[in-house]
Image 1 (cartoon, one colour):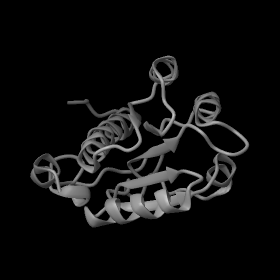
Image 2 (cartoon, helix red, strand yellow; image 1 turned 180 degrees about the vertical axis):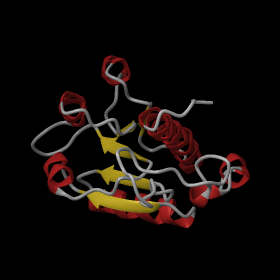
Image 3 (tube, rainbow, N blue to C red; image 1 turned 180 degrees about the horizontal axis):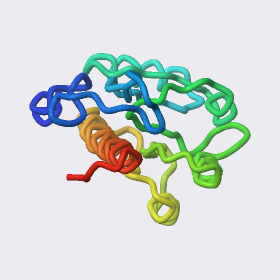
Length: 171
């Protein structure tokens, strides 16, 4: 585990002052899930298994998909998280999938991974809103640190949205 991850209390850390927040639009006791979820979309089964082992070792919930279509068809929890997305996928490339997600308003932070990345591809991904672009093979700790940063950003975005919907001040 990274020192930053441990200092933050890992994936079980409370959203705001130790209190759970109401999910956007909810009137009752439903809360925004605290357990972070990392969605991995990669067509290489060994890469998916390797990432699953790594991410579960630091306490993250991991959901694996072999294609953009499989991810799109799956039910996904309303939880803080991110998408670790391979650039080269069967059917639809990761870059095209990033554009499609943006068109339908999916605000999940994206960390691209690629064994064939180049500067123009990286620039395109980052301009379209990717949080990070890592070239395979990458250092496990670099990926974990990137995931930590984007999950915290997603938590903050969700917290701010919940506060705004309930007319509470954002801090």
